[in-house]
Length: 406
Length: 232
Image (cartoon, rainbow over all chains, first blue to last red; front, side, top):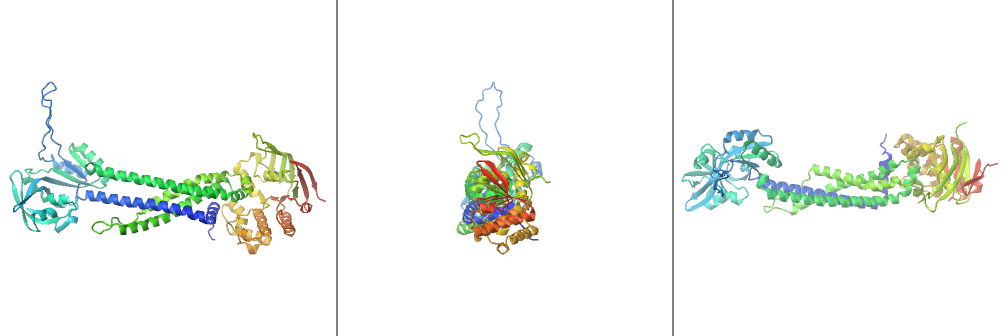
């Protein structure tokens, strides 16, 4: 037995087919709207993800530091001291850092913990000397904070004994190649001869000039911090969970805990503004599409007045008439979302071919996530239904006698 | 004896209630039509024929009076029940056929059944073809109304009115815009189905020649039944 459509969809389809030009016009409007929304959303999502990825490429999601030292009133309120001098912050270790690290590693959402000893030093070679940041790390653990191995231009990201890893800018400034020697001198008078086992380019000239990676014990002894670490770097599973995790850690340890979201508050605000303006554009497009569908269906109801009257005379209930027009709206929305998504995919392809980064790679990938297509389909069908509501109710309320006479 | 198919007692219809142009179109109509009866409803324009037909066809509700169709008092029925009763027990034949232009002749004939049952099936299609065959249009089953002549369109409309084997057929000047020869054909068709299915038929007509071929002539003047006589 062949499949036959039930009454309401059957009539809805036939009405749409009969009103060719009108159907094409609302379909075109809906398609355009969906294409704009899908394209914009996909584009902005991708660009934002890239920006965040780039920013987080060279920093930890969460950093635990010792509490800052502060001067306190030594005498009571009756005393004389009225001005409290802010204190200079000396390099100190995170108190009982092994325990804190264990606690952080056990916290839900934290995927990696790496102890870091960092302090100021001078890199000296011949007559040149550059101020650098000495970074004492366990290379294996630090790799899970910043994916250093991806940035290596020479050698490997490994520190051992006096082997060190430096950035391209510092290497250029000091004329250093792989396996060359480099002396670091510290303000406290200590110094050490390092051998460069790797050169990185992290995509940020400042960091390429400043970071000098050595082993944890070497940095500890050079910086007079035996057994201690200056901070603990953390990676979290969901980057936007960084702040709540930082808050929880702060509560649990009483230490200073900063998330990337605090450190980059301006970036986040900019991203949020971008999202708001995208939502605004989307809302307006949805409203315009809805008005388009509604106005065409209103005209269609008037044109089909007689048919509606005939159908009512033949026993079609008000709810069936309502369904006929709701289905038309939903169909236009659904079909428009499919064609619109295809169009958006085409646009993404075209734009990613045109707009390229300085290095020639596409600014964004020409891909469309299924969730956006699904979103578009749901929204467009919903908008189609909603905008058909007024015309459909008008059709359903029509008096059959008046309708037939018209 | 079965209950009459149409049973009207003291029906009035007033339009524009509560406005300055309030007009009573029908003033107390009593009318009964039994199963198998074939009656003509005649009268000058403006006498209320169409209004009476709309009331009997459940397209409008009377202002007062009792209106029963197929033994059911319509005053107690809600909108949905009225619609259902109309769809299942009344077949309409309008003056201007009123076929759905987007559907083929066969689909038009199936439409009342699709509405009543939700969707077509093989049986519904077979019945529709049979009906089109009976009105001599089997060959035109897949043509749209626009591709048919006036007489053919009206025959499709008759086939559609018969699709659900209604107990009552209401025809509003079914031959009004047809030539004499075609009008005779259409009338003969209605008469034949009336004999076959024993349905009651009420036919509004201006043509005295056709009225004379009915069992009974109801004459409406100024919203009242002036006379109601069996033909010879």
